[in-house]
Every structure is written in C-alpha cells, then in structure tokens.
Image (cartoon, rainbow, N blue to C red; front, side, top):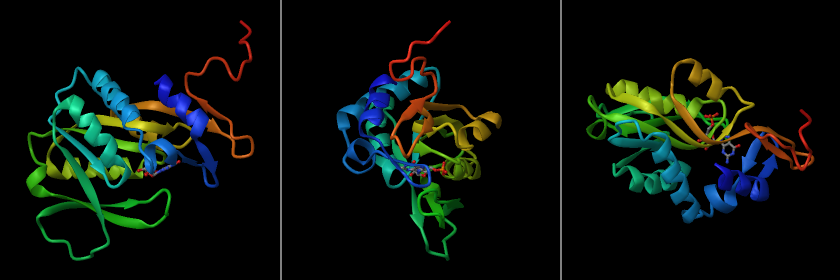
Length: 203
Ligand code: 5GP
C-alpha cells in the first residue's frame, strides 16, 4: 500500500532492538484518514471472505480495527491484557510475550462475545515474531470459531512471525512489509521495492 509505505519512509523512526516507531500516525497520534484507507484496503483484500467479527488486541489495534469495521460492517472485539492471576471461567485466555516490553501477560476475551460459528478476521498494527498474533489465534481456536485470516498494517519481514504463521497455512495480508531497516542511516526498504533510492535497476 503505497501511501502507507510513504508515511513510514517519511515519519518512521528506527529504534534499538529493531523497533520501528510510527507514533506520528499509527501508535500515538492517529491519522484517521489514513486509517480509513487502511480499512478499505483490508476490505478489498478480504473481499472474498465471509467475516462477522474483527478481533484485535489493546491498545494500538483498537483504533485501526474500529475504522476498518466501518468497511466490514461487523463488531470489533479487543482482547484485554491483564495481570490478574485468578481469571474467572467466563473468559478465553492465553499468554503472550510482549515484543516491545519483553514481559509475558495474559490476554482475555469474554466467552459471550466469541464462539462457534463466528468467522473472525484478526487485525493488528505490527507483526514481528508473531507472538501477539499467535495469542489471538489461540483465543479464536479456544472459542471454536473459524479464523479467516489476519490483516496487519506493518509486518517486519526480516523477523520470523509472518513466515512461520504463513507456513502453518494462516492467511496474512500485510499492507507494508519492511524488508530491512538501518538504525544508523534511517533507511527503510520494503518487500516488493524494485528501485532503491533512485538507483536504476540494470536488466
Ligand atoms: P510480535 O508479537 O509479532 O513479536 O509483535 C507484535 C506486537 O508487538 C504488536 O502488537 C506491536 O504492538 C508490537 N511491536 C512489534 N514490533 C514493533 C515495532 O517495531 N514497532 C512498534 N511500534 N510496535 C511493535
């Protein structure tokens, strides 16, 4: 998705630990017109699929999913992160290791909102090692619902999550796949780029 890649190139900041910060339009300040285009692009890519629920995870997934839901006309459920140990039996729960903070936390979804017969599209902001997505998929499985696929805004293609999950047969549609990012120069390349920074490709 070209306008998204353009924003990442212009405004993305590369931090230690392979963290890409896009706080100016995605993770802190949110560009809702861009979110609207992102939502329409998810709808276009999953146009063939029957979807009756979007599942995401707090916090950054919520805004994106809510705007996307206006294209899908379905409700959004967000998995809550919790550190409460004693979890009542009326929730599905699994553990997720946080990429940005390193710690492990529980995520929960109330059983009343997800169950057999649901056809679920999972949406998230980033895909790195795949732990958040695996956790959300585990909740869908625990609920006996059907996973349609995952819509990801930014996948870091040089980390293992995308390939591992696609290898398991999961349909993942990522709108921008970062192939490399250089902390020293600030340069970011994307999968599918054919011309790098004005260099002509010699055929
Ligand atoms: P994973 O579980 O795939 O390793 O990481 C995905 C989750 O970690 C996302 O939900 C996102 O919140 C966070 N994350 C992973 N990599 C990045 C990154 O480079 N930048 C930002 N802003 N968040 C990231």
